Amino acid sequence: MSFYQSVHKYYDEMFPLNKQQVTFVKDELAGGVHLLDIGCGTGSLSHALSNEGYNVDAIDLDESMIEEARKKSEAENPRFRTANMLEISSDFNFEQFDGVICFGNTLVHLTENALIEHFMNSVFTILKPGGKFMLQILNYESILKKRLKNLPLIENNNIRFERLYEYPDSGLINFKTNLTIKQSGEVIHNEVLLNPVGKTEIENMLNETGFSNIQLFGNFKRDKLSDESLPLVIRCEK
Image (tube, rainbow, N blue to C red):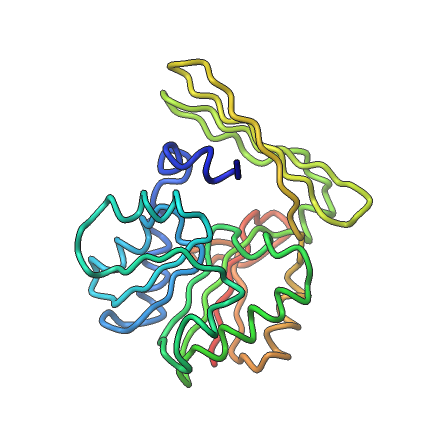
């Protein structure tokens, strides 16, 4: 069972809607335009953007996440589907979208840089001229420099979510998690390999793909990126 299949019932408690993400998108693109949300999870951001007047398509690789997203509303917008981020150029039309969003550290599940380059080219293909690409991962240049052993603990009355990092010789990060369900005492263990691609590599790939006006931030409030920034937020244009 995949990580997301095992935790989908608790995902919204682990990662509730970040309203700063909504504001970030609104500052980039006016309501009413057509957006694609890649790695949408349980759809909280997609639903919030739909409520703001955006026309939203949303995809995730995990069917259980898409099922949870569809439960939140029976409205026709947003439109959720199970799909692979590497296949968006065949799943959607040429220059179909005004904006593409890929938040939540989704990108680093592509464990080879060649796959990231393919993905970026696909995003470029489905964006209209002048369209915006908005991306968020973690600041892996800083993480690797510090050799962080764990990310901040996520805990509330119902769950405790521990996130641990190991650094094998492969150059990837072994991401290990422990989700404790407090009422039952159940502990769900998972681990997955992540590609710790850094800001310099990403900026180079975006430039080579043809994106322009690339800006990097340390969070969704658009604070300056620094070694102390855990998030890495990027916006650019076709």
